[in-house]
Picture 1 (cartoon, rainbow, N blue to C red):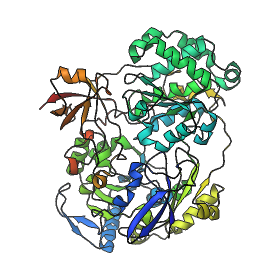
Picture 2: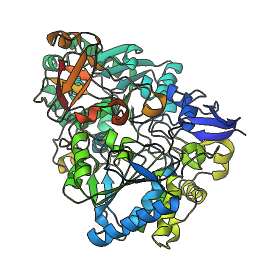
Picture 3: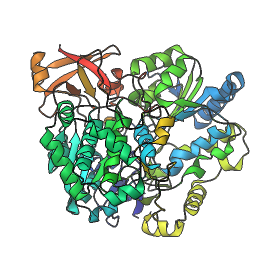
Picture 4: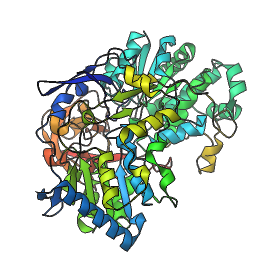
Length: 637
């Protein structure tokens, strides 16, 4: 019997699907009724049955018998494993305090219950929690500086637009349904990026800029629009705080300087400004480019452009569709949480502040920077590591106990999207292996002797409560498979109640009154960019789909300077580490920049780009990551 499913991956699209089991094999297809995901799946989604039926899925709990990372485990019963986790957890809390326990999770699975419910146990125990910074934290903070919120335009409103600018996002790979929606609605498509991506190749216009110069381009575009009086005077007068000061700020900016730094001609910058103002374009602000030391300032500058041309929320960034806080259960805490910056995990382990690490929905030994330091910290400390996952990931290999997880095809859940405004239902289609995050949470609570009823609510009870709190109907969701969240009142939650070009919130955090351009450089000559690959989502699917691209992409000029030819074996290195791979000489990558795709499994490939990235470097915008502010050199082997 066909069931409603929703792809739980950390992806904009959050596709609604129809799934069923036929002759013991899973079949999936896109839900044709869904207005955004429109009945087709991306290449990763089409291969979900291969992932679901993988022979490598964990079936039994594992207890480590050899050294961490050795892969030596013994199989155990669920009772034995859960009892051991509970004993160790109780012992660590008694000896070192609850703040020595850290739950590490992220969006490897975005099901509301599967993502949030386990946090109830750790809130109840008053453990340390993560201060998330790995993804879009810089952009969130920057948009709050300007608008007081990061919630942008409903993509269904694209039908009324003429132009969309993909700024720092390879949407054809990472937001395929959004890209096709823009095409179907007849929008003109522009791309701003450092690399000539697949999106850039399919765009009507491509503006290729140098790394870190996004902020300067945005300020230059603003200067032209203001100077030529192309801005919406009435809108700005009524709704923008600090415009006159901003006008004077950009007046001092030389377009020749903007041209020199960005690599665009003055004519290209002026054309961008005039046509963007005339078409009042929507800007889809990407996540990837903000993961650099210039990221927060760039988003802040870009976010001002829609307001200049009279758009209330003329950007696409994040929907924050529903309030999911009930699932997490912060109300179970009896004291404030100690927050450990996500990017500083190795440092806190080294300092002895983390003695028990519980990992789910994440693979930090693939996704975090400075992997050599993190792995050394785990080996040299007495931290006890528990990982709950579908597969024996790199993180699982460094764990003391590994608990088998199930997939979203095996449990009830719901998921919202950070691109569109729909919540989708996920019904269990079949059961193969493992237990859900909520099941394991209840088992651990019981093993710890906890009586609190909030730790034993079943999945449907949690889902019903969340829907009720958000004014949504469980019955309608069960009937249709998805439901749209009604539009919320749109207001600017800033101190002034307006769009703040001169941001009071930014100044209070020690930032400049207006976005500021800074040049960055490193000890090594080449800037390393580490985007996601089309067939993976961070580290997911590397082990099941087998389709990765391990090449180093390098410009012809940089390759020639190093006597490197297409296919040569090369070593990429800096003070953090080195990796060996083969070169692909490409005009898509500008001089001074090299590219390696991120977060492949070391246990399968032998290396990971995060042996080169730095963890000591974070942004002033919420301790956000700065992966793309990594410098390396390359030599032929």
